[in-house]
Length: 242
Ligand code: BTN
Image (cartoon, rainbow, N blue to C red; front, side, top):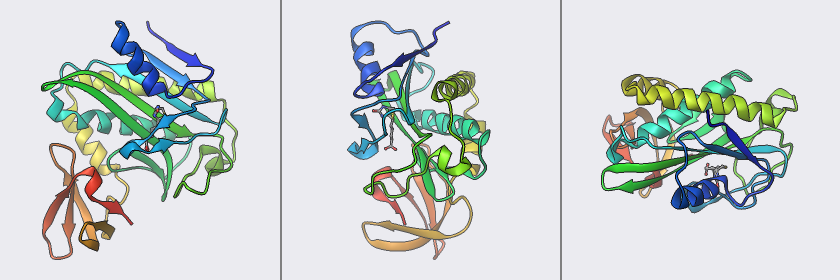
């Protein structure tokens, strides 16, 4: 059975895995973890900052041949639920901020960057990268609302032990997905969403408004109901949670 490989230092665990995938055959489920990532990548072209020795950078490779590229958002949903299930064992109040941030109350404790190589409508490979704030006490001011597990619970954690548990959760969740549990995953995901209930503030290109979450579209867009009852769906870059 393939296990997880620990790297002392790396630019990006996602990039490391992508480099390997582009040059050799990698067994499905191969994962890398590192506690000193120097050029972590985030969503929307941002960088992911993590302090040396304090947090987990983890990436796993899968070949989801059973999914079409059109359905790729189910990978994000599956992984977000697995991260939530992992963190639920340490604290309450974990939710998923659409599309795939992990929140504790109103703060971000983990981020996920999924990089898929597509061939037409086929997902050739998927690299799932997760950054988890674990033992960090301080964060740079440029980060809007970060939090670490230690800040929540007051406990200092063994990073290697946590990585092993996270890896098991992720692998089990992806295994279930491969057995066709998409409908259940979509339902659990919707119920686990940050701001699942009630009206909240958002902004788009036209300004700020109040709306409530009504669902997720087939391609993973967020469907919001505005105060006048109209439904509108938003792609990732089209909307900001205020
Ligand atoms: C985000 O919230 O913007 C996504 C952050 C994803 C960070 C992880 S850390 C492990 C993996 N390697 C990377 O370079 N990025 C992801």
